[in-house]
Image (cartoon, rainbow, N blue to C red):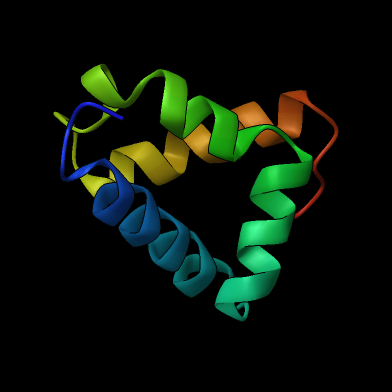
Length: 72
């Protein structure tokens, strides 16, 4: 992790995802980990951190759904 804000950003995204679905943060993390959302945030941080958190959550929803997630 070469950007000192990466962990804080990923944490903020997890919290925003949890808030959108009214989930505990731990449940949101586990869901995102299981459906490759955390991997996505880590890999595409250079691009995603330039977007709003809401846009990133939208991207996470699409990605997780593609990988079998069914929250929506």
